[in-house]
Image 1 (cartoon, rainbow, N blue to C red):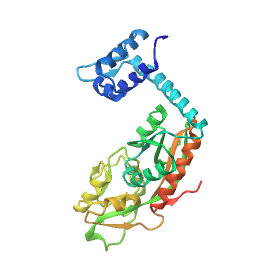
Image 2 (image 1 turned 135 degrees about the vertical axis):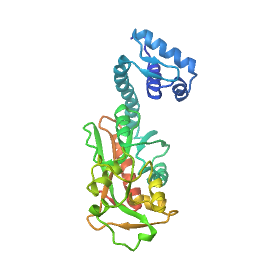
Image 3 (image 1 turned 90 degrees about the horizontal axis):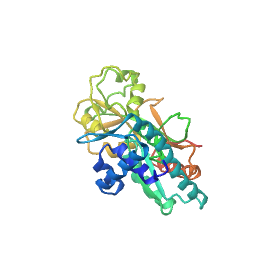
Amino acid sequence: MKNVTLKQLRYFEALAQKGHFGHAAAACAISQPALSVQIKELEAELGLPLFERGPRSVRLTGFGETFRKRVTEILRSVDELGDLARSVQGGHIGRLRLGIIPTIAPYLLPRLVGHLSAEFDGLDLHVRETLTPRLITELHDGRIDAAILALPISEPALTEVALFDETFVLVRPDRDAAKPVPDGEALQKMRLLLLEEGHCFRDQALSFCKLGSAMPRDGLDGSSLTTLVQMVGAGIGVTLIPEMAVAVETGAAQVSVAHFAEPQPARTIGMVWRKSSPMAEQFARIAEVVRRVGAAGGPQPVHA
């Protein structure tokens, strides 16, 4: 193992993540033959194959899976050495790899990016938009530094900070605007359009309606709030969306928006990062910016 290099470990991780030599090489900004040579040299040093090569893709061997877990820990620790240096040098953040879930990203990011750039000089922001389970995995693996999502997460290795609360609103066709607003139980009898499985917002909407996620439903599972709202406008059913999405999603659709009676369905938006990160103080400052921007958009701030 004396000849294994950090560069080889990063190439290995890229190939394990992409599952394709060409895609991994592009991500690492090297040629595909050069990447292949480095992986072969790593396997020769270890004395065991790390990948099963197929005609169109590659996948990890059993040993490769075990090896990757240790490599992930090593690369995360190396990255945190850089974070440690920055934290000592006056708190300069530099690169920030920020994860965010799809039901927040389009509505918060346009306002947030400018505030972060103004608050943190020289900030190099990289945004990763995906579902909560993937963000948590990538956070543990060190592929992102922090994430904005719906709480609670309840992961022992992560710090989570509540930032603001926002309510859910009912979106229904324009023709129904004058009808009484149904409660959660009444929604059970309506054609409720929801995000597809994997979105935490889907589970929150089902919880309000007292519907189990495994129950068969006669509706549409969409991949985005945009799709759901447009389908409501077409008269297919009704849906719930977070309040921050109203201005963006409902302007061009033939729909009406109504608030539920108290207690209104709501979610808590927060930010999470690894407890082991030396940049915890800087992340807390970023969280305060997110809190201000989120609260300015209408939701209620959660005071620390």
